[in-house]
Image (cartoon, rainbow, N blue to C red; front, side, top):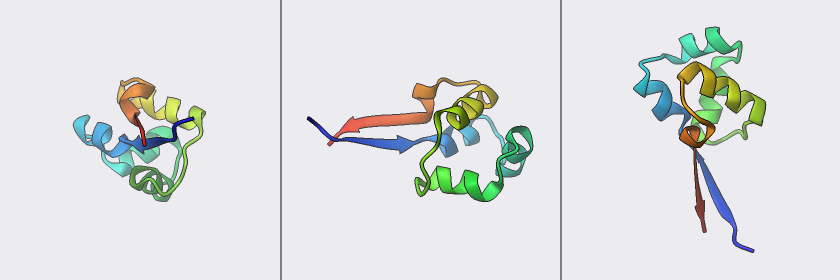
Length: 70
């Protein structure tokens, strides 16, 4: 079985939409610290959290993550 690498692209999508971390915090109720950890890949994101980000950023879950085989 191949291993996969999952890269979070939350920061890229947020910046494409011109949304600050503070604004994303207000819209999601998720603290800036947690958002920053997600963006740096230092914290795994629950699928419900990812879906919340996707709705606000008007993108798909596929747009939020890059999945590659390693």
